[in-house]
Length: 117
Image (cartoon, rainbow, N blue to C red):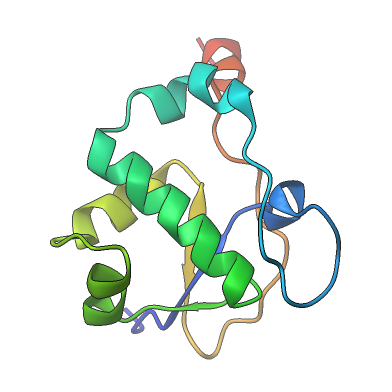
């Protein structure tokens, strides 16, 4: 398995208020509070996703996957489990240097879960 070097937010463009450099804020929709995949996350993992979203704004959706940096910046510890969970539900994607960025699948939503039942 290749080493993961970057984290990207899936469908980052939906959180952007404009296309361009120097994003100073991002959109966070209230409907996220009703999204089953987000509701079921523990508080720490929710904060890590929101923190990663803010870092994605700062780093053009190309966050260096450095655990010490992320734990210090997000003021938390033991984030590997949360990153793994966020990747499983497709809110984020981890990439190696050799992988090129492209727009990834939509995150799993409560509607998609109900469709599959």
